[in-house]
Length: 438
Image (cartoon, rainbow, N blue to C red; front, side, top):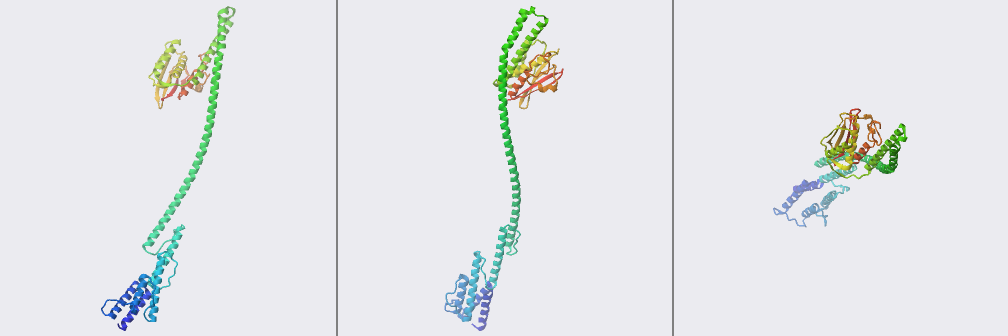
């Protein structure tokens, strides 16, 4: 091995120590292998531990590949030992630094030189900057961008933009949710207030209904009691007036006989009024037993009975096909009796009196109408028509107590129906009532 080869080998060693690049280390290895081949001829490299160059190469390989510190003194002259020692220290320092970075420790300082050390330092600085940016992003600052590390930077920046967009969307949704929650709280408060008011009104209504039911019961009981108790005196008055007329009529002059007639007529009217009051009271207390009712047959039977005691002949009575009803037969019969009696009474002055009973289905109810061509009434007084003791005609014109239509109204209301009327003076009237289908 000549001097030129040794100089070349020294240059390769210096290059490997100064730069630390893989190319320099590979060149050094090739140079060492060539030098060994020159020393041993063409035989393969079988460096023995006692050979200085082989020991140097083994020391470098142990440091580079295994990270081992030399166990013994390095071979060669003192200068070479120092240079080889510095190279081994550099290799071990770079390895420790790289291991620290791999474990996430960015604090160590690397004082070594060379391309590899420079690259690791640059990587450490980038990782430190990236760590700081990540901390700022974690605090909500999405303005940071990465301008190094190639595709990683692009992916990182894309992630940052997506996080910023997600935060903006989350903020908008949070604001919308806050507004919705506020609106919902307001609505809940309003509903709770409305429910409390409704509960208060329901309680008040229940109390009013209870008071009204009690008042109605008291009124009906009073009416029944008074009416029942007045019957006996009225019968006595009527009986005594009749006895005076029959047994002592000769003792009275014309005025006296007229007064006896007035007493008898008023006693009879009072008796009829009492009967109507009792009927009105019974219509509110009687239990309703609903069945299917053939309204056409019922109307014809009622009119046939009324014609038996009504004195006016020649009334044209027409019953059209009526839809069947569902109600209490006895009470509905009373309704027809009262309505047809009124129609007969108020068509009395008419020479061509006509009464028509018709019906039809409307929605979830059947509607029935009793129509006549009698004296009619003024529609401005229609509100009085179904009230107790309310009369639209004088007693001298038409007899009655003003209770009949009130009874009709009460019975139909108890069935869940409606009652109303239409009329024109001297042209007739129509009274309607409806009954639910079921």
